[in-house]
Length: 113
Image (cartoon, rainbow, N blue to C red):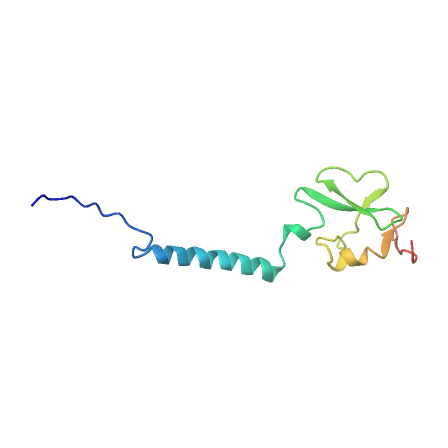
C-alpha cells in the first residue's frame, strides 16, 4: 500500500484561532466603548488637528487658524479658559450669544445681531 505524506495546516477552526478572533473583537469593542463614553470624536471638534479657533470681533462668527499663525484681521483669540473645543460644548454655546468688542471686552450680542 502506498504511503501518502500529509501536511498539517492549521485551519480557521484550529484550536486557538477562535481565541485570537475573540481577543480582537474585545479589543475593538473596548476602543469603541471608550470613544463613546469619553465623547471623543474628531468629527465634532471645533477645529482640526494643528489648528486653533478664533472669534470674529464684534460678531458671533468663528474660524480656525493654523497653529503658530496669528488670527486674520477682524478675528481675535478666545479669552483664556473660554475656548470652545467641541461643537455644542459649554463655550461653543456661550459664544453663539456673546462676542469680544474692539476693546477686547466680552459683550452680549444683541438679539438678531
